[in-house]
Image (tube, rainbow, N blue to C red; front, side, top):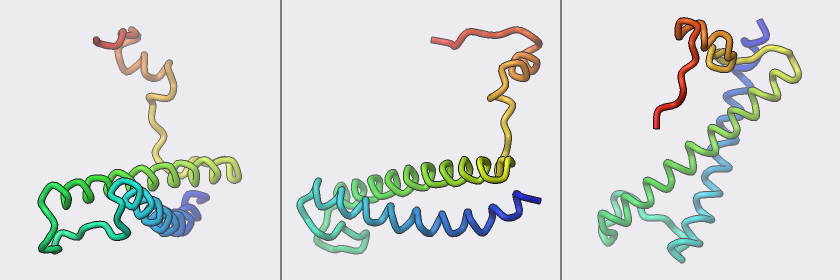
Length: 110
């Protein structure tokens, strides 16, 4: 039941993350390109490389900020309610991971 209450919180956090990411991207772009406005795909006087670089940076910033805000929201929700709002992976429990591998632990491949 508690997970149902996380949905509105998640939506609010998503909106806030978007606003924060937009401000962070604008500052990063101004610092890197020494311009106040980032290029848009429809700007005629901008090259393909500049458009692609701006889009890649924007995507990375938005994804990173969203992940951090989502994780902080989920952690805070768990601290308050005692219930994790998302999926619970078996990877976090070494005993369950070993059970899925037939009881043996494998070393990471190099």
